Figure 1 (cartoon, rainbow, N blue to C red):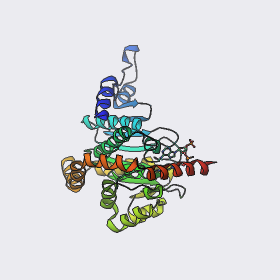
Figure 2 (figure 1 turned 135 degrees about the vertical axis):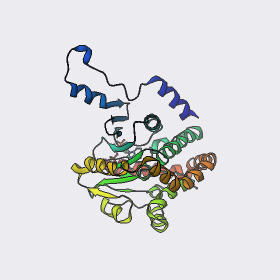
Figure 3 (figure 1 turned 180 degrees about the vertical axis):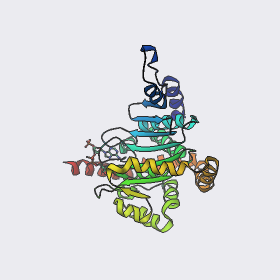
Figure 4 (figure 1 turned 30 degrees about the horizontal axis):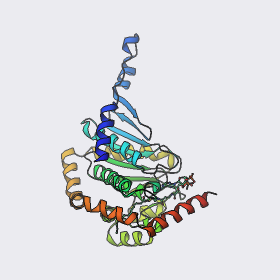
Length: 303
Ligand SMILES: CCCCCCCCCC/C=C\CC(=O)SCCNC(=O)CCNC(=O)[C@H](O)C(C)(C)COP(=O)(O)OP(=O)(O)OC[C@H]1O[C@@H](n2cnc3c(N)ncnc32)[C@H](O)[C@@H]1OP(=O)(O)O
């Protein structure tokens, strides 16, 4: 509810996909300049910026929340607002999600939202995670993840909700649902999303061992669909997008819904219980202790 209220308030306050400003009132301008301005619009919030090209119907969402694009409540709220606005804009048919930060696509859920927080805060946070997943997994737009850095846990989930994943081929980057390494458990809808992509057995091993895969390994198991050099990432994403957009929209959307609806329905039917499970699990002393140890390890690794 809090997320919905925040969404309503923010939507009312901010003008998204701001109308392209015509410079014609300042005198004569080149027609192509005006056309280009009319065809592109840009929206920026503190953690997300969106470039929308009306000539292609494709928006690029840049995650820009240093240091690691962790999915905090604020980040998720902004993300969902941006997504909802794009979804409502009938001229927007495709979305590419990428990171503006070097080396990191997204570090996954913000651990500080789960550590030392009240049950109420944890509950609100979890609802926002559910909302992000629901919106992305059931989006009518073609969604492409352009993964230009590491993408563990919630970052991997975000990628998995997209229709197509392209990752930069850099062995320093990794991707996977590594929750067990933090002493926590990926919920059933994380598991379902991964199993829908790479199959049951690979998911079982990957989750149990908290596997993080290099781009080449991720390609081998089908966790990503393509790996490319960094400089080719966006052009490859645009090419993939064009291929998906060439399919008649209703046929593509119905097919997506047919493939994903059982997973979405399962999650939505258990949504409340899932929040309760998360809150009671994450606030346990033993789990809080595991998160503390993991946070310390992250800090030590840096030192
Ligand atoms: C019975 C079942 C019931 C169901 C119960 C459900 C249970 C919960 C399920 C939760 C599901 C999903 C969980 C997650 O997504 S948890 C997040 C997992 N993420 C990770 O493990 C990634 C950790 N980070 C890294 O590995 C690295 O940071 C990086 C992403 C590879 C980037 O490396 P880097 O060298 O560029 O940056 P680094 O120096 O490590 O980090 C910079 C600062 O950022 C802090 N930080 C990193 N990741 C996070 C994060 N996820 N949340 C919060 N903060 C993070 C890091 O500590 C550094 O901070 P500082 O500068 O030292 O202060």
